[in-house]
Length: 262
Ligand code: 13P
Image (tube, rainbow, N blue to C red; front, side, top):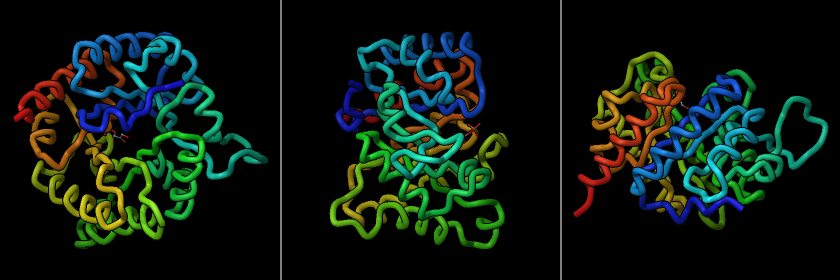
């Protein structure tokens, strides 16, 4: 039984989303590095999102102690059934997952997940006791048109709004134009969006949800993002595929956590 991620809510979170990358050998190498980094940095929660087919390899490599929780990159909204090529939340949970990403922009774009499906997928995750990390973010054109705030708030509202009790889930702010491009918003721009998201989460009864930043996070820029009190962690793509870079990110997060201590 994976540990409850909520128990770690006061730690900074560094999550690696491997996307459609990796072999079994690389999975073992990255999982071992993540485990060592997590054990060296107890003030940081380290989470891995491998491809579904590598989950068993990673779960075995990180061991049963819960030092490195694992998550699925996506789940279907339905509990089971005729949905060729999809994976259910229950299957992820049985595979040892504690988390699931929902609404990643690549899933929205390539698999056609709109806000309603993202909400339903998050609900499916909760029904299987997974903690969803709901990904939101504007495109470059939307930012250019001055619509970033409206887009991000609508994506948050669609998943967290109209509920009798707050959704137990986290949010990742991933501007689409910053994913895999080497470009990032300024630290101040990211902090501004996190503030918008925080206000919506409070309005929806989810004040304890963490808000991560994602999009071209690297060892050279993580410190800036984590210097902002409204940034509770990072969701990392490309840099999570190199053991040395991912270890450096966890070490930098530990330093940021140390600086936050009163
Ligand atoms: P990169 O870190 O490669 O920009 O990817 C970010 C991302 O999409 C994480 O989910």
